[in-house]
Every structure is written in structure tokens, then in C-alpha cells.
Amino acid sequence: MRALIKDGTVVTASDTFAADVWIENGKIAALAAPGTQIGNADTTIDAKGKYVIPGGIDCHTHMDLPFGGTTSSDDFDTGTVAAAHGGTTTIVDFAIQQKGGAMRAGLDTWFAKAEGKAAIDYGFHMIMTEANPAALEEMAAMVREGVTSFKMFMAYPGVFLVDDQQIFRAMLRAGELGALITMHAEIGLPIDVLVQKALAAGHTAPVYHALTRPEAAESTGTERALALAEMAKVPVYMVHLSAQRALERVMEARDRGLPAYAETCPQYLFCTEDDLRGEPGGPDGEWKGAGYVCTPPLRPRHHHDHLWRGLRNYDLQVVATDHCPFCMKDQKELGRSDFSKIPNGMPGVETRLHLLWEGVREGKISMNRFVEITSTAPAKIFGMYGRKGTLAVGADADVVVWDPNREKVLSRETLHMRVDYSPFEGKRVIGAPAAVLSRGELIVADDKWVGAKKQGRGQFVRRGTFSL
Ligand SMILES: [Zn+2]
Image 1 (cartoon, rainbow, N blue to C red):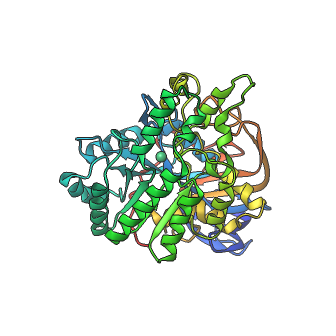
Image 2 (tube, rainbow, N blue to C red; image 1 turned 180 degrees about the vertical axis):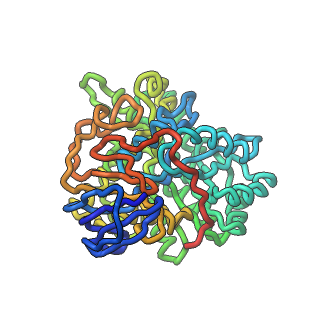
Image 3 (cartoon, rainbow, N blue to C red; image 1 turned 90 degrees about the horizontal axis):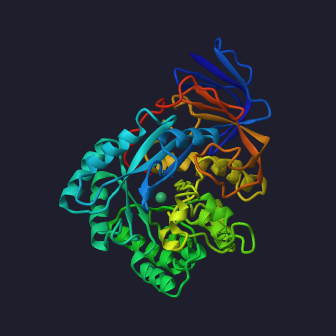
């Protein structure tokens, strides 16, 4: 099985050049001068006038996640199919160690959710809800399984929150194992007090989700996580960084030479706190803001410029989505009379590249940086580089033919995520995948699934240890 993507412009994190991409047995076999004849291709894709880029890697998704009394509305079937339509060919989702349980049981639960369902390749991080001696020991077994990153929370007391000593012990252990600790760095204990006070004062609307989770809670948590990592002498990765001051803490750490990394998400670059206010006077009123409840919350608009600057200047390394959709009907509605009961999360796995390309069009980031933050950097940070994250001989042929002129209107009608609204309803974007290949197989063409198989074609990605 040999495929040829011809006459396109290859864009990697470092280079832009005209080349034909030859694919054999699911791997990239050659990048050749246009027109070079290497053999006969079974499939030829014309990429004239288009960019040929590595498939997107979304290293922060929550498919089929039980949370807030319900379950995220995309499972590994619908969520990965949606991802592929948007040009993402690998996700890294989160398995959960239940309190009092083994990580192995959590991993098996998530394997069962993904196997036979995922349409694209997938890996797992492990959420650690306690770092007791057994758990610290078990981290080694997870690393051997290719689960080489662990997520810990300073937020959600009673659910996910772990104290500083546990975080510190897990960091030391990660250092021994070559694993990476990723942090949700909002400090949840005072946030819960603000939430209680707001509710006691009768403030129940969605916007209070943002007003009770101020920027200070994220920036101080970020500083604390960075200090713990510095003391443990290990790298650390901040998930879903949303705010200027949290970014400044990461910048300071990086300026001191520390291996501090951070991701942000499209919602923090394109949505604002005002979205949480809904449409007072409109048909859905304030309630419309529930569709924008995610954590950390959306921030006032001036944060956008800081985050874009962080992406441009390498202070932020990755844009992932934190895809965690809940339908307005029956799910977000759980918080109709109490904002704290609105399930936290927004849909996003399908729209990441569409939205970020706007940053390329507006000159905020280069095409090469676009490829780096959406594919190459997550591959490197999370132990997949070489196999995923670039276009090079021997790499998996996860390839997107990106048409910079293709227009799309983002809408629940035009997108594939299993959720009954779009936070970007009606937004017109220019730039979209014309073709998406996963391990050499054309799976999406002209916004239609064309792969032979869908459910279950995705494979688990055993990731390597941290090596940056
Ligand atoms: Zn998340």
C-alpha cells in the first residue's frame, strides 16, 4: 500500500519546502523533490496550493469522563471522529486513579472505554488522586505501560485535590522514572469559600463561575507548583494556563532556566469572561453563559494578547483543547439554579486547528509555530516525537493536507462533536483540512469520513519517558 501526496508545500515546526510525500506501510517513506518518481502509488492526493503538515496532537481531552454527576458527551468513538475531521490524528486523554484504588484499575477502565471505539491513535495520562506509597510505587508500572505523565490537582477539594506533600513526593518519584508531572494549578480551597459566599448571596448565574475563580488563584497555584518542581529538580507542565499572571510565573521560571512548560487552550485565546454573562435580554438570557463554563474560567479580553505573545515567544509550548463537552440540555442544566453544579467543560477537539489558523492569518504566529504548538511540541514533551509530531522519513504517516483557502462556518450543524451547541456558533473560519491521513490511511477527505474502518481503528500509543 503506497500513497503519494504530490505538489504540496510541506510545513514542519522548522521548515517550509515544496515536496512530494511518499507513504508506504503507514510510514513516511520519502520526502522528495516534486515530480520525483519513486514507484507507483495506489493512492495519489493532489496538494497543489495546499500545505502538508503533521497531524494534530491534542494532548488534553476528556472523552467519556464521569464528572459533576454526568459524563462528558463525546465518547472515544464520536470524539475521535470529530478530532479527525478537524485535522487531529492523536489524542492523549486522562485515565483516573480512583481514591483508594490502583492506577492499574483506572488504566484498564480507560482502555475499555477506548478499545474498539477510538478512530485515531490515543495515549493516556494518569490522574493521581493520592500519592501514597503504593501509588508512588505503581508509577513505575504505568511508565512501563507507556503512560509516562501524571496529572495532579490543586483544585476540586474532596474530588481530585492533593496536598503539596503528595505533589512533591510524586514529583520526586517522577524524576526517578523519567515521567512528567502535569498540574492543574488553581488553588481550590479558597475558591470553594468564594463559591459558598456567592451562592449564599443569591448569585447563581453562570458568570459567577468566573467571578469565584480569580486570576490570583491560578497564578499563586502556578507559582507553588513551579516551586515544588524546582525543589524536586524535575520538569513540570501546567495544563490549561488561562491568565496573564500565571503566564508571568512560568516566564520567570523559564528565565531562571527551569524546565517549566505550559499549554493554553483555544477557549482562552478566543472567548472571554463576557461569554459567561450570556445574552441578558436574549432568548436564553444569562443561562446561555453555561455553555462557556470551563475551568480555569474564561478571562477578560486583555489576557488574549498575553497568551498569544507567550505562544509566539516560546513561553507557552502547546495549545491543547481540554475537550470536555456537556450538552446544554440535561447536562449543563444540572446547574440551572446553581452555577457550581454546571458541569465544567467545553467542546473543542474538532475546532483547534481552524481557530489557531486565524492566528497565522493575522500574523500572530508563523505557520511553523502553528505546527509546533499543535503537533511537534506535544509530541516532544509527551514522549511521542519521531513517531508522531513531524513529517520525516520513518515517522507515522499522520498527515493533514491543509487548504488555507477552504472556508467553514463553525456550528453545531457543521461540526461532528456530540454536543448540542457550539461556543463558536456562526463563526466563519478560513483554512481547513482537505485531507487527513492516519498511519497512511486517508480517513477524512473534503470533510467526510472515507476510511475503510472507523470505530476501533485507532491504536494505543505507548509513550516514551521525558527527554527534552
Ligand atoms: Zn482537563
